[in-house]
Image 1 (cartoon, rainbow, N blue to C red):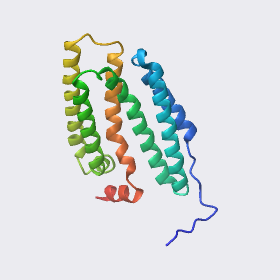
Image 2 (image 1 turned 90 degrees about the vertical axis):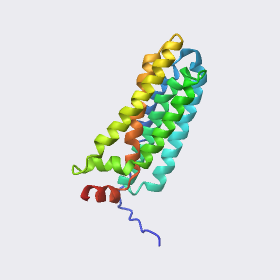
Image 3 (image 1 turned 135 degrees about the horizontal axis):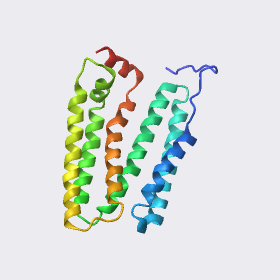
Length: 197
């Protein structure tokens, strides 16, 4: 059964310009770490940005009359794009070592967990009767400790490259956004149910 859409229904703002600006602000420093690969990664990161904006436009076309849903998906796309730009510098620094695969595996597992547990994460934010936030924070801290141990080991076995500290900071910020982003995949009706639980 088709949904009848009134011409008076509000149309969501695409927010493409805002998204492009925010991502460009993250993309540029991400591309310059390390500087020896700047041209290559400017091309790669710009291509990713174009793809992200294309996905955002398609998402807007499908949800432009459902403003709440579109804005939620827009934030998810924005956050996950920031995650990509935030974690890339560290992966570039670790590309020639075994630590690359350790961090890559930890990041993949962490991302999957964040999406699988997105309802529990959301519940801890919207419902004060539940204490899942402490558990989730514990997992997050555990991942940070693991990442810190691996990175410390890497820095002790060889001279730390330039921008290592900034790259690590970017990576940790990326992990934090991985925790937040999946919450925005939930529909309003699902969030309302979690609020009343």
